[in-house]
Image 1 (tube, rainbow, N blue to C red):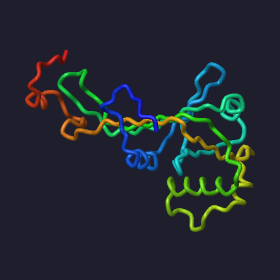
Image 2: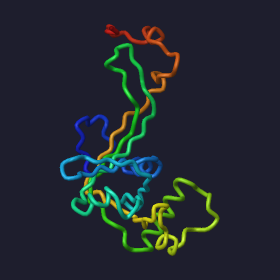
Image 3: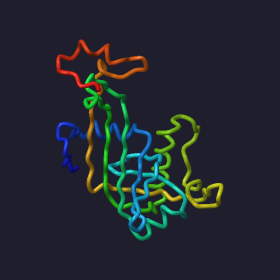
Length: 192
């Protein structure tokens, strides 16, 4: 994993922590390039065995783009709250984010596709289904518009992670005002 981040003090290099974050975060944003125009799609996803998996229809803009340019950027970010400061420029957000680059490939192995889709169900609706997903369901499923479902995968060739931990004492909540924090700071104020 490449850890080249400009704000080195926010780089996260703990691979176990990154893996846990990727396994629990809810939404990934898949960035593609449609000729010269960026195209970004929010997706449900799983991170399994070092790869990102997601699914979608076998037709549409995303698939058309991927036939000419499989390069992709995946971004996952979770916000953990806003931290206030009497100096407005020091107000900040607690977060963790991961950015990964790689090529999107179609998962053609039915076993891998079934395992990936089962893992997605386990992540988003744990214990809801009484029986595991069958291979025949993956092979035959069509959307309400008649499109077959594709399972897609990105193996990152570059991955970076950043995080800014929450300082709970400075976490913003509705009703909190700057006068509550003036006594905490000894630095000169510039609140206008």
